Length: 104
Image (tube, rainbow, N blue to C red; front, side, top):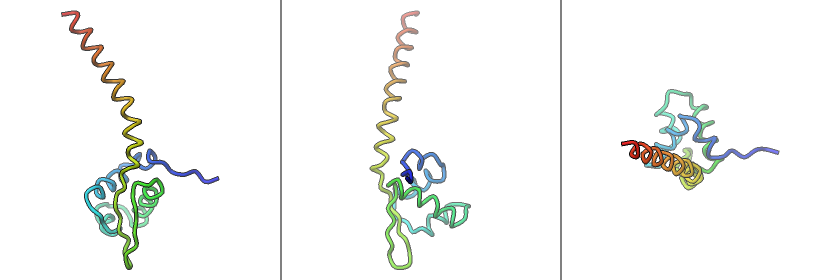
């Protein structure tokens, strides 16, 4: 059985996060994306394959070029996961603030 990549695997790599950042603002060709990095075209293609497998990027063939656009709905899973820790730490810091204010 082949394991499906998830969004957490995709955003774990800084290059993939940078690619998502580029595509969040505009649709770009694969070559234009590659021009933004000092890595080989095959390495960029591997990153793009991972991003498409987890649903963060959609690639569409137009003639001889592949146009890539972000599909950021998958990041909602990350936001929900991170939210629980934001709430936890906000509560902890509020409790610490209250404790420190009591000592004054």
